[in-house]
Image 1 (cartoon, rainbow, N blue to C red):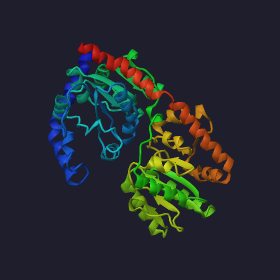
Image 2: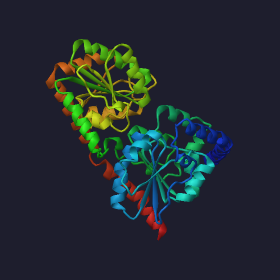
Image 3: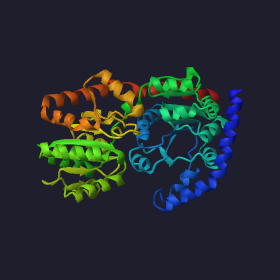
Image 4: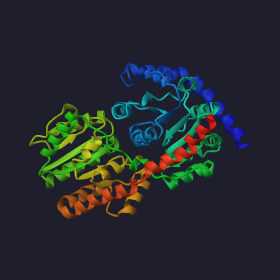
Length: 444
């Protein structure tokens, strides 16, 4: 009975998505006109390919944005090594993800923009690429995509699966619960990023035996090569930080910029040799922050202009893409943004920990709460949670006690290494058992 209701709700969704397709096409064209979509590849969003499909088996990995895409790359590399006879197609949705990931993917991976969840776009995409399996990353649960895959007998898996509290509440409503239950029934494998997330999927009536916990892939990222020019620039920047009090605020949102501006101003009074590195979530936001400080006669360096860190510069804004990991290596203290204002849900702390930073975060961390708790369980000194009002005090304590700072840095790195061990191998084993072996049996 529930399955029948799910089918009815899906038919309504499909009809509605057909109906709004002309408006979505118009919106996509308008975004392209304004420079918000790739000028030559925007049609990929409508399912139209830009390269030829090779012969043979093909698996499709899909992630929405940069963080999820980077988390998928170690698994993709593992799949290529273990099954070199299978072509890998990867898609992402956001332009920022596309610009970064295209430069670090293995050369034999096909990379496209993902189709919008419109019936014609999804059907066109699936008809052309004919994937044997689809690996969705984190939260990409789209009805037309999932039901289209099921109709075409394509194996489905959800890797590092998560669902925010808001999404879980929405999917639990009586009207749409039959739809999500129907969608989850089409999966052969669900690998949640935490036990709490696994419980969410079970409460939405996913089949329990397809749910397996392998760890959070965001603990298992791999470094990628940077250009010689970038390395030279970063080495020069690092040399300019010697004998300075350095801290970084990363992935900050507009809602919380005043917290970090205030922290910088307060710390500057106590530490004249201060250098604050600010990395906004959106590069365009960085230029607005720089203008705000410049109006106050503060000397600000901008990464996009390749500004040097002169004697009078005590604030540097990284308004570029794909360099966050490298800048973590240059700072002893990293404050992870997206966590100091109600309504925000935190960001990945693993990259800062892996780089050996003393890691601080706020209390508004959403599904990243499990990551903070796991780090703290592994080593209580690994992550500091503070409010915006206590941020200056926490940073000052680290600046004033070299042994404490070193202990915090060591603790975060140890916790990261403990939690990252074996995750990619575990994911591969589950994919091999539940996806790859099933495909091969089906073909025999």
